[in-house]
Image 1 (tube, rainbow, N blue to C red):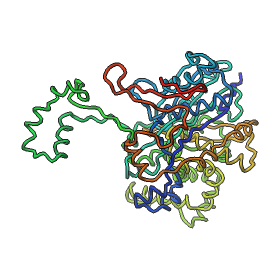
Image 2 (cartoon, one colour):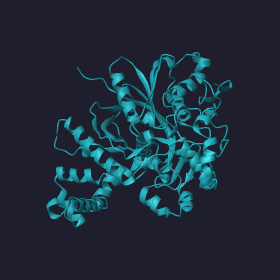
Image 3 (cartoon, rainbow, N blue to C red):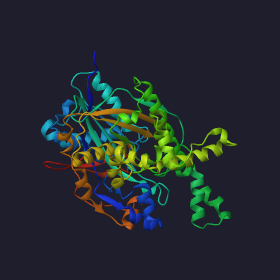
Image 4 (tube, rainbow, N blue to C red):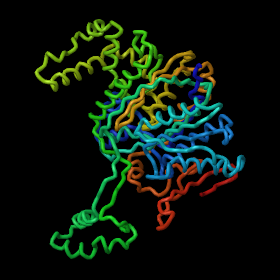
Length: 510
């Protein structure tokens, strides 16, 4: 029995209205702009406004899909959200998305129009959206005429002045998944590589109440000799009766949106996982002897920054040159030889030489031609939005498809290869075939124009947004869904999020 064709029927993107020019950030940090622009491919960085979060961005992208495709809510069997910007440790962010959509659609379809829709969050750093998509495609294959929406929504935030700050971004990408899709049929083979590492993570940080009080006394300039009397008056047993100290534990668990990360190690993990996942993918295929990437018209990557893939892929390129049989041509152009382990006294020395050699490979004209043909089109939107975490790989897909559409390329029947990656760490490699009606879908998109219509902000506004010092949005009244309030009062609603929804008949808050 032949497996049914399933995949992506349509796509939609939510782009925040605000962005920071990378040159503005470079000047504030005394970084040479060319290092970020020419070296990493960065131009602009999308930032979420005061009233935006992962839920509102996801809801906007999904609503666009529903309206453009005239979907009846009861037809949508699941809404799966890939995110690492979750708003709660137990309640899925997708339930906030469901609530906003139901409010908006209630007038036409009833208050419980998404009652029987399965919603959930999937989290594995930046590969969570890929996990959600592949899981949902299996669900569609197992039934008849099923439809799912998968959305990847994130606010990529790093500490001010950190080495990750200039790669920040925000946004959401939603996909309508169906049988017989118009855009892209996803093939069933998936290569997977997972290793439990700490290259990038967002831990619950444990801080004792006493150490927090001592730090406050120190910063206030109180002499240490006076601490004992003050701490006795402010001991945890007394403070348990106070609003912000009323937990039973002698410590706080604090979550931050910003990660703990090791940039060079994370790059090594990215490079290793995509290679291992590609090996696993190739094991599932009937080998033709032809390098896998030769069979792919374009290659779509998770892009933490625009040039990440081109900087990390030279090792696979080298391996495929060996498989293809043209390694000598590459080495002749480079005027170099590949290092061998037996030439060095230590593994460390060999690895250093090999890394230098791979950098030289990436500067060769043959590799540059490969990047221009297979990768570059998928970098363009990343360059203008920054890192969308779980949504980055799908933004790259949009970027590549819209570039080919604008160039008049006929992609029908072409195969696209995908390299997903999430820190922690996991890679998934798979492929998709462009469908005959792809131009019908891509022609309705206007991502480039939306990027042109955004509002730039200066460094001062950016820093206030980053620190959470603004109470009102910078660009008000342009959202259908917006965060209205986070309940602060004690009781059963403490921490609950309230969203305002601009419905066709007026503003509703729930």
